[in-house]
Amino acid sequence: MANIPRLDALNDMLASVNVRPAPAVDETGSWPTFTYGSSDVGRAGRVLDRVTREVICTSEFQVNTIKNYSIATNGSNELDFTSVKAIWIKPKGALEGQNIGLTFDSTGANPKAYNFNTGTATFSAGTYLFEVRYDKSFSELTPDAQAIIVARAVERFQQENVGNQIKDAFIQRRKAEAEPFNTSRRPPAFPPNQPLNAPIMPAQQG
Image (cartoon, rainbow, N blue to C red; front, side, top):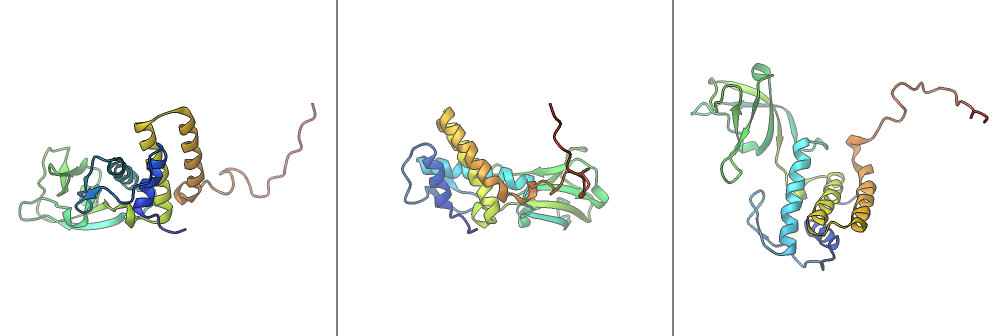
């Protein structure tokens, strides 16, 4: 399964609302701070990136997770996760169990740890351990993750722009076709409590 080019994903989204394919993206700057144009393909780019972040924040595909990330306080006794492009953190070790998340500046950048229990962004000087999920662009993801994201982005874009029952049914079918590639959601081969050698019970006669 090959990677999905960004423009192909955007044109799939445009097709879901009967818009002609775009010859190029409509966005400037660089990931993760794109500036999106006001055209149809620009709006599609914004939706695609929003859905991408939703998926990687839940880490369904484990493609952007560092299980044990060690970080030291800076000169202001802050825990600054900018270098790793963190979008989600979970404290481990000395801080485990505390309600600690990330705050960002007005541009959505410069993620820093914030202790919601104490209402402070400063910590005792030292080194701490976290599980971290970090930002990735759509183009950096694996093909199976891209397939799921495109299916969900198509649905979101179609609902925001058209929202009719016939198209909704088509989009749901596309999602169902893409879901088998989501290996994180495959059920076990046998029911959990079913012995492998369980006999097949004959059908009851009416």
